[in-house]
Image 1 (tube, one colour):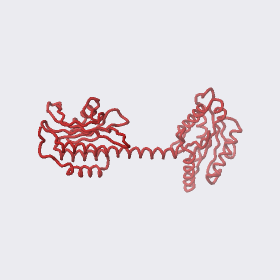
Image 2: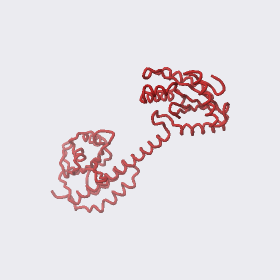
Image 3: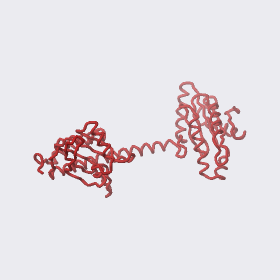
Image 4: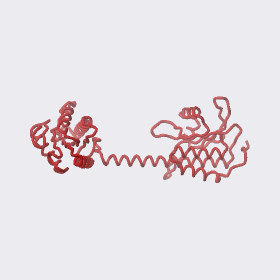
Length: 338
């Protein structure tokens, strides 16, 4: 079959496609703009790109041109079949040119499929496939085939770049989260609690308000670790952290600041009340390895008991020591038991 019209020089099309990809705001826009350039240059009536999604099975429609919403939806559904030409091209990484297909209305089309492949360090990764459609009777010249393959390579570069950017963003978010949270319990770590405490004290100082600081220590935790093992100890820590997170107000901050030590930063003067609520909730926890879980707590308030972060922590620590001396499950204030 002869090609419709004169052969096209790929060099006249690729610069426009590259510019479309380079200047788009997102991957969807880049792929759609590239498809529009490609269909216009090659005289196609429609085109689509389907990409593999690591979080979902099969191929997902990423961009299309020349397809109405119904046709695009039907293509996205049909391509889930592993035997569909899109899926075959993506899996085998082999291009297929001038394949005849009959539409739902009986119209015959000619479709070409090229895989999208990323190659890094000699390792190839299939990213998806590009398909382009012409009326029956059309065939691609060698130059047009080369252009379609080049467009597929460009689409692969765009998709791979977007994935790398997404991975970098996710890793950055993960490191940021890890810098602020305790990896075992998922609540704030000591560094984060310290920063929050400084901010709350500064705000309270400006506004003439109060800040409560409560320190919690798991009763008899060392013997639980030694007798029952670290896994049981970790289970206790996670359960206590969960109770803390669920028992406080949205304005409060809870964190883990030591092996079995937790802290609550609570704007206002309700620290002792919140500490008791936490204790009651922890006391209601199911036994762990035959052991009931309880905590002792020490509470101090700014500016009543201390004028800065360091002295407030010292006052709460002193109160915690007195609570522990009083027996498991006790709460003590900076000046006297509460």
